[in-house]
Image (cartoon, one colour):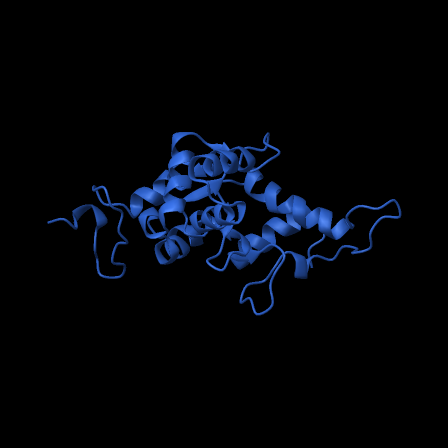
Amino acid sequence: MIKTFEDAVEFVLANKVCTVFGAKGSPHPSLWDNTDLSEDKPDGGGWSPKVQAVWRWKNEIPNTYPDEVFYGKLPNGEAVLMEMEYLRTTHYPEHHKPVHDLGALAETVYAHIREEPSFTGDLRRAVIEATGCTKSRFDTALKKLQCSLNIVRSNDPALENDQWLPFGELYPDIERLFQLYDQDRVRPAFGFGHDPINTRG
């Protein structure tokens, strides 16, 4: 069972895909279910030691080991910590979707993030002002972009709030691996000796 930060790091790397708080029916192990710390709240109020630890680790692990651990969301929206090689070879090629498949509002949100990395609150205000959308629709568009691996949260440990960047800004090697020299990104054909750079003939 997990008791320390070091235990949590080893757990994520060993399992390759690890959700943060878990969900009923999830095929992946979670930090929450495997952390052996008290769930009792302090007498003065506030979070239990277990909640504090898991919430802190979900940020500290990718911030401390940005080349080894990725933080993002699965297609169903679950927050996840993922071993980087698994992201590169399995998760990204299976679950990346181009922005133009996500709807007009997601495209607008992505355009704002490409223009300037943004904190969630500032981004929400700018998009709502520009489009007149509701907070709920904005939140859905932002989640779509994260689940489809088009945006990522910054790993800068100096930031207290979530700042959003284009996926390719933080992980350019992964994006380049699956990108043709064209305006539209397509998924390469894996397992057939298909070089994405040479697919245009």
